[in-house]
Amino acid sequence: MTKRINLALQGGGAHGAFTWGVLDRLLECKDLEIAAITGTSAGALNGAALKSGLVQGGRAGARACLDHLWHRMGAVGDMRFAHWLAGLDAAPLLGALDWIAPFSPREAMGQILSPYSYGPFYRNPLRPVVEGFNFAEVCADQGPQLFICATSVRSGKVRVFSGEEVTTDAILASACLPNLFQAIEIEDPKTGRLEPYWDGGYTGNPALFPLYRPELPSDVVIVSINPLERDELPRTPQQIQNRVNEISFNSSLLRELRAISFVQRLLAEGQLEAGEMKRVLVHMIADDDLMRELSVNTKLIPIPQILAKLKAAGRAAAEQFLEQDSDAIGLRSTVDLAEMFG
Image (cartoon, rainbow, N blue to C red):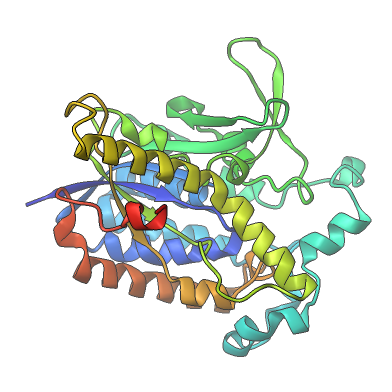
C-alpha cells in the first residue's frame, strides 16, 4: 500500500548533501509517495531538484537531478568557499577543520568586506547553479507541491513562495546569507515594491505550516541537518559560534513543533474536536552524532569528498528510518513531542 508523506527539508549549506543522500534512498522506496515539500536554503535547492526530477522522469529522474545539483555544487569556485581544502582527505578533515581553519570563510569575509563592497564585480556564485533548474518542471501542477521559505529583511517575517512564485530569485533568496551575499530583491505582487530577502533559516527552517492544508497527508518527515542538542558547553570561539548558528537556525522549527505538540495534547484531551485542527504526525531523519562532529565551517565547504561522505550518511539515516519507523506512517508520530517539550 502506498504511503503519502510530506517532506520538510532544513537548510545548512553544504550539509544539505546529507539531505541529498536521504532523498536518494527514499526515492528507492516505491511504496512512499511525496505529496509536498517545504524547504529552506539548501533544502530549497534539494526540493526544487527533487520536484523537477520527479516531473521529468519519475524516481530515476529525481535521483539524477539531485546528483546533477550536488555535482554542480561541488564545482562551485568562489573565494567565499574554502575550495583550497579540496585536496585534503575528508575523514580527518571533518573532525579537525576548526584547527585547520579556525575562522570560517563567512566570518573572515564578514569582518573585512560587506557583500556590497564588491560593487559592479559582485556575483552570487549560486546563481548559475539555480538557473540550471527547469522551472517549467519546478513550478508544474503535477508532482508534489513545493514551498520555498525566505526572510523579509524589512518585516523580519517568513515569506513562503509556491507555484509560479518559485523562481531563480526565490531560491536564491532562501539561501541568501546576509554577510556573504547581497539581499535578493523580489517584487511584491500586492504593492509592486521591490522587497529584499535573506536566508529563510532565520524565520522558517523550514516552515511547516504550508503542509497543514487539508488535501495533504498528515505525516511530515523532517530531514534535520542542524543538531537540536549538544551536551558539552561550548568554550572556544569556534564552538560558541557554531552553537549560536545551530540554535538560530533551529529556533523557528522548534516553535512550530511546540505548536504541533500543543494541538496534539488538546486533541488527545478532547478539548478540540477531531477535524477542528489537523493532527500532524511528525517523523525525523537525522544523524546528530555526525553533525555534532561538523561545524559552521563545513557548511561552506562544498567539496566533493565531504559531499560524498554526507550523502552516504544521509542514505544510512534514511535506511534506518525505513527499517524502524516507516510502519508508523499514517498511524502515529515517531518523534515524541511531549517528551521534547516536557
